[in-house]
Every structure is written in C-alpha cells, then in structure tokens.
Length: 491
Image (cartoon, helix red, strand yellow):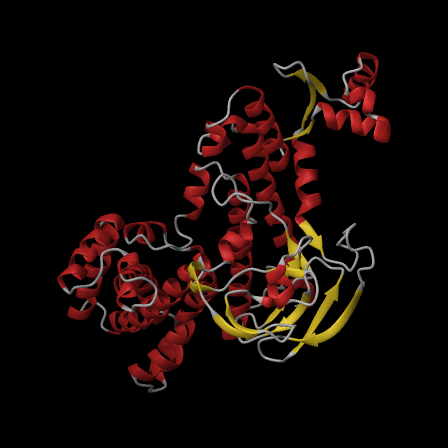
C-alpha cells in the first residue's frame, strides 16, 4: 500500500504540473498580451513613450518577455564605465546594441530616439522561467541590505507573541517567524517554504495572488497586543507575518527591535477562501443530513408513497435551472425578512448565511438521494441479501447491517472531494447573493486578464481535485477492507 500511495502521489503531482503548464502556455501564447491593459486605469492615462515603456516593464514583470531600456543595456555591457554610452556616444551605444542582438534581443526605438531591447520568450522559456520562480525557500542569507551590513544571520528559538508557544525565528530571512503554532487551522504554520505565483494585475496590483486569496476582508481589526519593545497597544498588525523592511519609520522603531516591521493586518471579516469554505461546509453537512435519511427511506419503501414523493423532488430539482431555483428561493427568503444580498447585513449577522446555505444544501440533495437509493436497491437484489433473508434476519436488520454498509461505499468515496472542494466556492449562488467568496474569483480573473491569478486558481483547484479523489479511494479501503487498490485484475 505504501508503494501504491507514493506512486499515486507522484502521478498526481505530474498531472498537476501538466495541467498548469498547459494553462500557462495557453495564456501567454494564445491571448494577445495587449489585452492585459484593458482594465488598467493607469495605462489609459499614459501616452507615447511613457506608455510604451510602462507596457514593456509590465510585460517583463508578468513573465512575457525580457526587456532592457537604453540605460539597462549600457549598464549591463559597460558596468561602471557606462557614462559614454548613457550620454549618447554612438560607438558605445552600438557596442551595447550589438551585444544584446547577439543574445537574441530585438532592438527597437522610442519616439525620442532611445533604443531598447526586447526578447519574447518561447513557450519553453515561459515554462522554465515560471517554474524557476515558483518555489521559494527562505534562508538566513535572503536579506541583502547595504544599509545594514552587520545584520546578524541566525535561527533562534523564540516564542509566538500571541500564545507563548515555541516559534522558530530567523534574522536575515525574509520572514522573521519561520515556524510557529496557534489555534487556527492547520495549527502549524511556516514561512520557510512558499509558492510564488507572482502578483495580481490589474486588480490588487502588486499584491501576491495567494495573499489576495488568504487575507481577510473589510476593515482592519484591532487586537490588544504586546510588541517586542514592550509597547502595548491595540493594533491590526499580525506579528507572525512580519517581513524584513529596508526602511523603517519612527512608529516601527516604537514597536520592533529590528527591521522586521512589514506585517500583514488582521481584518474584521474572513478571507474569500474562508467565506466560501464556511458557507460550503455548513451546506454540505446540511445536505448529507437531509439526503442520506431520505435516500435510505426511499430505498426501504420502494414504489410506495414516500419513494414517489422523493422521485418527484429529485426530478424537480434536476429539471429546474439552478439560476431559476436560486432566485425563486431568494424571493421566498425575502418574505421572511432575510437579506437578498450578503453585504446588507454582512459577516457578523447569521441571517446573511441562511439563504445561501439552504440553497447550496438543497442543490446537492438530489444527486445524493438518487445515487444512494439506486445503490441500495441494487444491493437488495444481491445473493447475500437473499441468504440473509433465508437465515431469518428482519428487513430492518438486512438494510442496516448489510445493504446500507455496501451501498454507502460509493457515497463515502465522494465525501473528501465534497469537503475539500468547498474551498472553490459556488459561482451562481455567490453571484446571486453578492457573497465575497471564491466562486466568482476565477471568472473575474479571466475577464480581467489577471494571468497570475488565473494560474494560481487553476493550480489550487487542480491540486485539491486530484488529491481529494485519491483520499476518497483510500477512504473506501477503510470502510470496506475487501477493496484493494494494489491488486491487479485477475489476481
């Protein structure tokens, strides 16, 4: 089994990178790169050489190409002796141009006469550059600050400033807190290893995509806390998130005894991923609580009134378009004074959650009821059931001890995926109720040409989907030891 799990994990990782690679190549080669500025308010205010320079710098930042201005070409070729080239000396400038042309760059000219060099990446270069930047390992040599040449570089065991538990801290790393523990999932947190999917653009410009997904929403939340210097105050800063800050101000000096003062903030409301997960998980529990007893009862009373009512319910919810059902249920909710938009009452009011949760739960019940009923009826005709009846077992004993145990196996297989993929949100429901969750994130990122966000979300959803299927398969072997994932057919 260990060999099987390892092989499955390796195949899963390979599958993830195949899918993500396809998406990267499609985004960077099949969609005109000019499209990324359609929603960029800053670019619309620029003209002429300023706009050209801005675009090429942004394309370089986003990984489309390699760009070098006249200044960069001169400094690259001549180093400290670039004065003549920068002053416009034709011989020196031609030398710089020839050097860049020999390395595969195309030389172009701005309206003011300044040359610049551009190298558009091939699809292989796109992938190589993207994956080279994807994995980031923090180290005590990560910070290189000319203004702080005596910076101590060491790992030290300290304490989590919020709960006093042991924490591994670092001086010289990008993040001060490398490993720490707290009461929030997954309870063990680290900043040593990170995935770098780049920054969001044009929405939330300059903010890493994972931070956009994971950071809280709404106003900053003030928390009473004690800082390293002994200062006690109500502050929104998250000390365990602090990164090295090259220029610190007077307020930073009051709080911190070193340069680790660039910190994220607490927020009043959950993150987008947290919002979707809260709604999705509650709805999932409610859906299973309704669907499983209903499906079992339908199977036990096949072709009787309760079964016929259940079939009508299943057919009705499957036949009615989801969007029509959502708006119908939303209208019913307004009759009971429930908000038709999530932001009306916000995160702090339970009434904001009631209708989205009920709708999400009801939309999941038809398939669960239908498949459980089908599996149980199919098992009812098996030979082992006939043998159990011949032994004198009651119908109730047969259903609970035999039929349900076997029929539930396919349902169990889908539970991990259902739980894990709550993180992806529900597009239509969240849109209808204006829920600030993950549901709209991928369509919005596509519409806004937010390439890094699209790739981040594809990576996230693909990873969750693939590993949830693997966990579901393993869970089946726990529920029914007769199932083997390692034996080949015919063995």
